[in-house]
Length: 254
Image (spheres, rainbow, N blue to C red):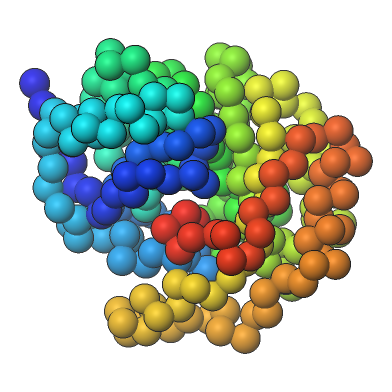
């Protein structure tokens, strides 16, 4: 039986959300209120298009030849805000032999997310900040649920790619980055760390929604800062993927 979900948008041939060429589904709804969110229009769960999981999979299968060596990534918003829909979508895609990735901040309790985490082939986990107080200031929530998600992935041997947004004056601080890198070395489930430079490409959406964009004066990181961040993680033996400024899409992080 098909499950109805709320879909914000799709990207048929994405290259930035997991391995290979991928079909990316952006779901509606998010509990976080990230100051740098690129898609504040995804926050409201009721703001998307009602879509049946069966119909969405049929649409995705039209791209099978293109994504056969990549797969499908379910992103948001926060896809775990719609756990039943996300789980049904993943299970249907896996029956079709497609690789599935879940792009999440892990911001829901494990009793809701475990079945989805179990089912997905890869978890793209966005850690906003290792410092709980900074995480709350950045997003309106602490980091306990995110770190519990990572610990659960470790316990079941689930492959994880960590994502971390580099914000000057906030997360782009050498001491904070060293603490995060050191923390991550304890998790064998982590395959790589993706560092995402902060940018203001989504600011116009805040203005359209008449929301106050508090980061309007926060500068984008420069090359020297990004090189420092990369070296901090590489010195801890972690594989690093750095997405260049201009390559990052507004539909990626939020």
